[in-house]
Structure formats: structure tokens, C-alpha cells
Length: 345
Image 1 (cartoon, helix red, strand yellow):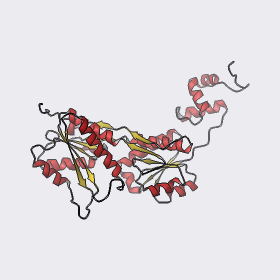
Image 2 (cartoon, helix red, strand yellow):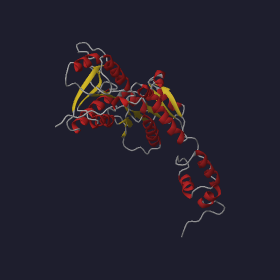
Image 3 (tube, helix red, strand yellow):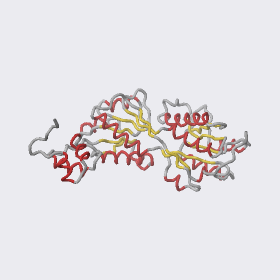
Image 4 (cartoon, helix red, strand yellow):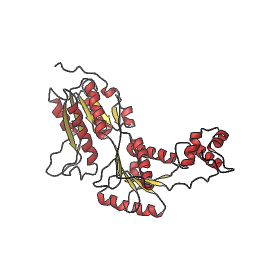
């Protein structure tokens, strides 16, 4: 027989009818008083009519960044906006902290529940933080990390750009990125991101019929005994060739805009002679002339995913460490919208 409510206690149907809500909404809150699937105001009304106290506020979280100067950077702002929106929906406070070796130890003493680490860390630095608080990593990889890593799917993002150019008739496409000479990728703190985008370029070229790809890596900083490769050197080499690339994918929007300026100075028109696609989709990409096609790396989603993953770790529901990839989206604008006629045969 159906289980009856205790005398005097309202049923889900009673509460739903009185509040003008669905029975499913009442049931959701009754089963999980902290659910974010209904609004905070509705959740509180339901709890009041069920005769249950509202749950105590969840302990706050913190996003840790390298220093205060990076807060003005687009990617940190987008990550933070996504994380704050998700934390707010879960009725959690999210703080912003700057890096120091003892940041987790200090925050744990103040009652903080976990850290979102939005800066590059060495394995020993990460291990130190995890001794005090649950952590998740944003857009980086640390060897043997015993925590979740939330990343943009860089290989997928580059593939979107290359496939778009191939579909527009380009058959000679270049990727323009960076190299830190003398430092292996696994030891360069942002090396993983650079390696993933270069790998994505090779994969995309291999999958597109008739496409020839060129990888050009510019020198980040001088290293004794190593050749320095500059943007000007690459472009001068291209312009001396009849079979130079007709389209370029750049590591980020800043490099794409530098490239576009240097091409114009050398008399090349964009996109008629050279199509250009950037990466990260900054506001300056939309303001550039011509407006710059760019890959949106899903930073807002990454911030939200980090809050969800950290919440699961805090509650003990995290399981084995995961690598969570956030999908990218290509924003096509005038800098790559020109269709070229592919060669016959």
C-alpha cells in the first residue's frame, strides 16, 4: 500500500497545490534540500512549507590566480565569471586569492572548502596544496596529479579552424605558434597547451584531403646557442615563395593580430590573399579590422565545470581523477570568410 504522510505533515501534493508549483519541483527539494535545479527563492518556499529548516550555507570555495595583475586578462575574467555563476546557483560563495606557497594551509584554517587552481604549478606545489584542501586544476596538466583537471579541448579547437579553412578552398595552411627553446614541453609551465594545439593542427591536416600544412614556432625568449625565430623571419620566408600558405591559424588572438598587421605592411590583403584565424576569441578580435575569426575556448564553461568537480570532491563523490575537456566553438568573421578556388585535380 502507498506510504501515507505522518498526521499533520503536508504531502508533496499539498505543498505543490498551495504554492502553485509542480509536484516534481517539491519532490526534488524534499529529496535534496541543496538542489540547484530550482531557484533559491522557490527552494526556500518549499522547505518552509515542508516544515524543514534550510540547510546551513555551504563552505566557500576559492579560485587561486598567479597575481592580481592577471585579473584584467580575458581568460581569467571568463573563467572567474563561469565559476561565480555556477557557485551562486549552488548557493556557495567563491573568493579570489593570489598565489603563495601556503595558500591552501591558510585558507583551510579559515573554513574554506576547496581550491580551483587557475595558474601553472609544479607537481610539488600542487601536492602541498592537496595536503590541506581538495583541489581542481584549470587548463593545465601536472604529472601524476591526484585531482580533476578541467581543460579546453585545444586539439578540437584547432581542428575546427583548419577544417573551416579547408572547406573555404584553402589547400596550403600554416599554424603559427610559440616555442620556448631549451625547455622541454613537459617542463615549460604552459607547454601542454602549446603542444596540444600543435598536435591538433597535425591531426586536422592529416584528415583533410589535399591539404598541406606547415608548422612555424616563434621563439618565446632568447636561449644561448639556439636560433631565434621571429614573426618577421617567417613572413619574409613565405613571401619569397610562390607556394606560400594562403591561410594561417595563430596560437592566440594577440599573435593573429600581430600577423595581420605584419601582412598588411608587406602589401598582403586579408582575407583575399591570406586568411587568418585566431584563438581564444577576445573582444579585440571582434573589434579588429577586418573582424577576426577566432576559436572560443569555452572558458565560461570551464569555470562552471571546475565548481561542479570541486563540489563532488568535497562531498566525497569524485571517484578517480578525471580529465574533463570543454568543447570549443569557431566564430567565423571577415578575416577568413573569403572563398578561394581549390586547385583542380
